[in-house]
Amino acid sequence: MTTEVQQDTKMNRFELLVDGSSAGEIDYQVRENTIVLTHTEIDPAQREEGLGGELVRGALNLIRADTDYRVVPSCPFAAEWISKHPEYDDLLSR
Image (cartoon, rainbow, N blue to C red; front, side):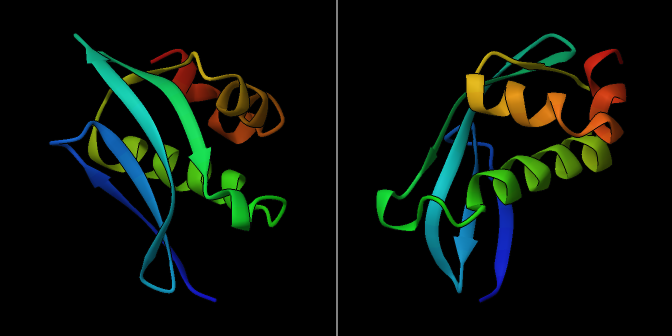
């Protein structure tokens, strides 16, 4: 199984691809120098496989690499995931 996270700026989302097919997305809003993660969704048939965490990690890595945005996780899943991964705390206070 190969996974990849891509950003779709037209749809304001990060998309998780599993073996080339969409398996989930994180919707976001950009407000000045902040990106607000508003909703995370994984295909119900693929839940409980750790894909939500892969999606959040991939999105955060893209945000870190491509922007100087501060991250605000208003989505409960993303907020909980970030709280368990302190290596991403710097994105919360940029």
